[in-house]
Image (cartoon, rainbow, N blue to C red; front, side, top):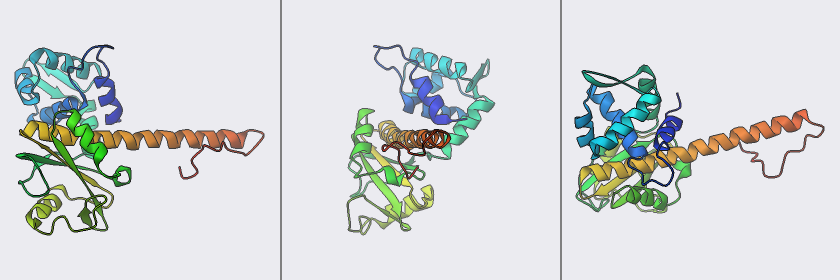
Length: 241
């Protein structure tokens, strides 16, 4: 199951023109909480997400419609489809880990999230910072794992020179691999920091998925061209796909 498409579908259930009552990061965190707790109540989920019970009721309704959760008198659990979607999501985005305050971070609470194999989508980290701020974080720091070390895009010096313990925490707990990205959300409270990092991470995955779909389209264009009277492919087709 494509977790990205399912999460986007649930988030897009909000009626046109209405102010969003929940966003993609709430859906991701809800699945994470339900998976961790095995069975959870609506009130507990509402408190953990920072959303009103009415909003959580609507969120759960749409998760049920998409077949991701099951409800009973004992509470809410992930369905088999929900477990598969969550597993797919976690193969791309890690859980958030809280890291200690250092020169790398700027706020009382800093939460790091790892995203698999998307470093080529990062420019200087400004896009990830903007996404994080949009969902309530105050800032975000983007790092990439390249040539077996963590670096900051556009910065040549060793940013971990005087904060080696932070580096060790990131490497030990997140276990980055080549081309992975680490996003650190920063805020005055933990939930906003985590949501900022998660939202920025999910946006990177959406960018990567969009590119995959473009590549599929280009392959289809080339296949059609080969079947036609001419082998010529449109100039805008990306030959690297």
